[in-house]
Image (cartoon, rainbow, N blue to C red; front, side):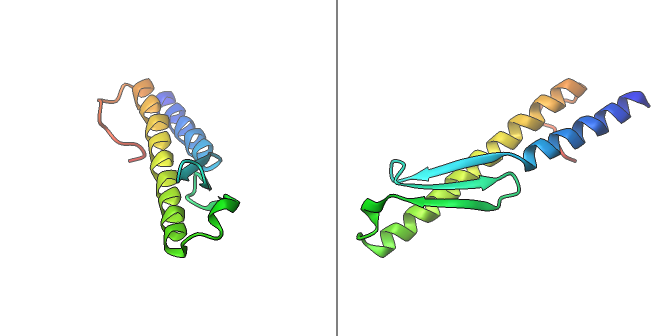
Length: 99
C-alpha cells in the first residue's frame, strides 16, 4: 500500500513538473522561435526583424515549423520524465505513463 501511495505522489509530482515546463521551438536557424508550456500553450512568438519584409507565406511556414518543433521537443521531454519514473517503479520497458 505504501508503494502505491508513493507511486501516486511521484506521478502527481511529475505531472506538476511537466505542466510547469517551458520549451522553445525554433525554425529558420533561430529566426523564428516559439515558447510553449507543458500544457501546450504558446506563451511567446519571436520573429527576427529581418523576416518582417519577406514573403508572408514563408513567414507563416516558419511560425508553423517553430510551433511543431516546440511540440516535438515537449513530447520528448515528457517521455523522458515519465520513462525515469517508470524505471523507478520497476515497470517493464515501453510501458507508457500516465496510464
